[in-house]
Amino acid sequence: MATKSKRLRARAALLCLLLLVISVAALGQDQPLRIKYRLAMSHPNSHLFWVNIEVGLPPDAKLESLDFQMPKWSPGRYAVFDFAKNVQEFNATAPAFCPEATGCGVVVTVPVSRIDDQTWRVAPSGNHSFVVSYKVFANDLSGTFSQLDSRHANVNGGCIFMYVVRHKQDPVSLSINQPKGWRVVNGRTESENQSEWQFPNWDIMTDTPTEIAPDWTEDDFKVGDKQYHVVVHSLGNEGGKRPALARDIEKIVRTETAMWGAPEFDSYTFLIHFAADGHSNDGMEHLTSTQVIESGSLADRGMYEDTLDAVAHEFFHVWNIKRLRPIELGPWDFTRPANTRGLWIGEGITNYYGHLIQRRAGLWDDAKFLSTLSQQITEVENAPGSRLMSAEESSLSAPFIDDAVHAQQTNLANTSVSYYPKGEVLGVVLDLSIRRKTGGRASLDDVMRRMYEEFYLKSPNATYYLRGRGYKNEDFERMATEVAGADMSDFFKRYAIRLLNEPEYLYSPMIGYPLQMPLQLFRSFHSPIL
Ligand SMILES: [Zn+2]
Ligand SMILES: [Zn+2]
Image (tube, rainbow, N blue to C red):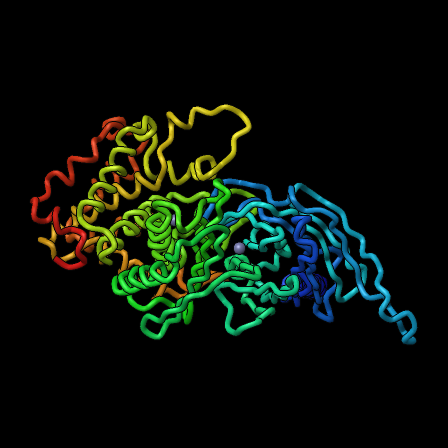
């Protein structure tokens, strides 16, 4: 008995020790760090951003090393770009130890090593604070890359800021040191000449693109109690169209907020570039801002309309995809591409509403709206890949088809279909089906609103990243069924999922659905309430 109880006591002591070791290790690893980012750009013509990351460790931390990682891609554009390829001169320093106040102010080099294609390892060697520094080459104006040149700095954080591995959830601050005479603005600017920001985590910091230039303009308006800023950097002639552009953007904001209800922010910034370089063209959604980049001058024919089209789409993302989001879209693992089946909902249905909203806002007439839908239907029907790839598979193929660059020849032009037009056409058919099944009493608007309410507004936070939780495609199908008051599973199976092992679904024609609509319903389906 005695021997047994001694053995039990020894085992219990060992267990306690083990738990202590584990909890100390966990404390050292996962206690939040103090992380400060500094961004400088003293030589714009070099296209080199200078990044400093100041890290403060908890007093009791005994870290052997800390890893700093460049994402392989950034949210909203799903191709893998390996941002680490533009990083150079990575190093780390720490304040020199000075017990007698001699040698203070001297810095010592902290050992660093590169451990894989995207990761640099820093060994603090007993220092409780150190600074990582590196440069990033950036000369592309887009919603994903960044650009620094003599005209401006346009910053998308995903390709500029490394995160600290296992500490992406920690609060961070950002301080920007811009060239003399240049002004800084982003979707979280609260005061003039602001140069410092606090963010709840790295993800939110990189979700906040920043424009820095001497000559951008700003037009403001208010909808409800929310402030909107239209920041335009024109690298070409505006033809006097900017004031009208801001007024029409306001119409889009009013129409979209009328559909969804008040958005969850105090202010929102449209960062718009007119880049007369002929190749910059993009739109990117963020929580409190968007980057819209048009490849030409505002004065150019069609540019004004193109800009509103992009704005209507990107602002709809405030709700659909940024806050109401597929479960895989945040927080992300940036060591591998995102895999989600939901982009036909997040992007395709946003494409549909981007067009619908312009009709509802009075910017388009019926003819323009219907001819645009007809183009989308034609694109889907004529794409050879639409007979081989379902909307869900298209979403999963995003890393290959969303602006991906291919070194080898591919057959994707024949085997893939984009989730933008495909999802838009599915949105039209789903909307019409719900309107028909409910006698016009409900529509896709109700599905979107109820999804937003259930998964964003009313769900407890599932992660550190953002309010609410992500949805699965099956949740969207369930909501469509609830709103339609009729089983919609056949629609999803036939047109969105189209299982590969069920060949009878492979060649289902989609367009039969809208043609069954009473003409009156079809003519007026762009109105929110019939
Ligand atoms: Zn600019
Ligand atoms: Zn989009």
